[in-house]
Image (cartoon, rainbow over all chains, first blue to last red; front, side):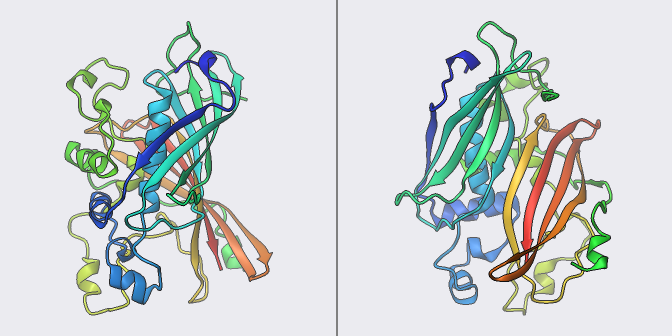
Length: 154
Length: 172
């Protein structure tokens, strides 16, 4: 992706994920060594914690967002800043759709910066994870964004 | 907000080193678990003088490297007869002294902000150092609450800054 080819309003993705079964959630919990029972122990989640079911991990949703942004930025770009909020639960067996939209862009010295609004929707179009990101993109005839990343100074 | 809590603003944790380096197998399990098959995590051509200097881990991977080391107590054994044990074995305070709050005060993860500077390469060690960046009291219709911001910097073994993370917590 090159800075000049991006326009405000452009959509990123969507990146579909799921349906996320209990096997997916157990696999993520194991990879993370996160043993919080609300992500894999249905009786505990529902009877003890009074939740409607086992929950998709917030950290898993963060990774989905990071994947969408990295794939969109490409090898020569860089995902500099990302913010997430966990506004709603997602439950086992939901299918999620990670989305982004270019909200603004501005030039800086050796690369351009693209501001993105993002989130994760389920099949009912309910937003669970609103956030924002800033992605650095190379200019059309420019060098790749420096790595390690050197942030703008203003 | 009490004077004891106010004094913790700016308090820092020790510089903690993750118990394992960035392991190839741990990266494989991690990326397979969120279903991301990008070649930067495994391909041979990522070695040597590539942009990243070798196969890397996902940007947020260092946040999850601070696990229970060898030779430490097993929380599952400790809580095996506790039906209320929720399985949480880490700390919500990132190595910082816990806030002196009365029992029963709840915890809510209000969001996370991340700045990414480079990926941790496979084989590298990672350190983390946290501080209470801010603690402020707010009043809502549900009563008073504390807004707590914990900032953590993750660095590679050579000192390079990998990530700067701000976690926003609500305590009420």
